[in-house]
Image 1 (cartoon, helix red, strand yellow):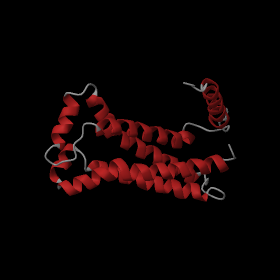
Image 2 (spheres, one colour; image 1 turned 90 degrees about the horizontal axis):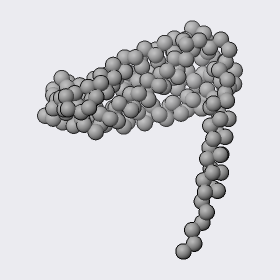
Image 3 (cartoon, one colour; image 1 turned 90 degrees about the vertical axis):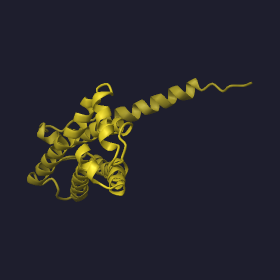
Image 4 (cartoon, one colour; image 1 turned 45 degrees about the vertical axis):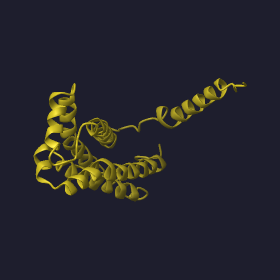
Amino acid sequence: MFKPDTSVSESQNKGILKEIIETNITRKLIPKGLSWFGCMGGLSLLAFLIQLGTGIFLMFYFIPSPNEAAASFQHVSHRVPYGWLIQRIHSVGPHIMIGMVFSHMLRIFFKRIYRHPRELHWVSGASLLILTLLMYYTGSFLTANNAVELSKFQLTCSYTLHVAGIPLTMALFMGMHFFMVRKTGIYEPL
C-alpha cells in the first residue's frame, strides 16, 4: 500500500507556523517607556489564564448539586494531590485579576489613551471588566457555604454561566480587544 511522504509537508507547516509566531509575537518590540503599570492588561490576561487552568482542574471534581457540593470541596481539599493549593489559587485569583483589570482601566483613563482611534478598545475593555465582575459574582455562589443554600436550578444556572457562558463571552471580547490593540497599538501601531 502506498503511503505519501508527509514529513516534508509537516516540516513546511512547522516552518510556516514558526514564521507566523516570530513575525507576530516574538520579534515585536515593547514600546519605550512602558512600565510594569503599563503591563496590567497582559498581567490581567495571565490571571485569566491561571483562573481558566485551575477552573478546568476543579471542574473534574466539583458536583453542582446542593447535596454534593460541600463533599466535592472536601474531596478536592483533602484527597486530591495539591487540590487544596489549586482550590486556593482559584479562590484568591479573582481578587488579583479584578485589581489588575481596574488598574489597567485607570491607567487608560488617566493617560487618556481611550481617545481616537482607540474608542473601541475602551468599550471592549469596559465590557471585559463587567464580565470579570460577573464571573466573580457567579463564582461566589459556587463556594461550599453558598452552594448548600441554593436550589439545584440556581446552582446549575450559576455553574453553567461561570464555566461556559461568561468565559466564552470573555474570550470573544478578548479576541476583539487584542485584534484592535494589534491594529492601532498601545501608543503607536505595534
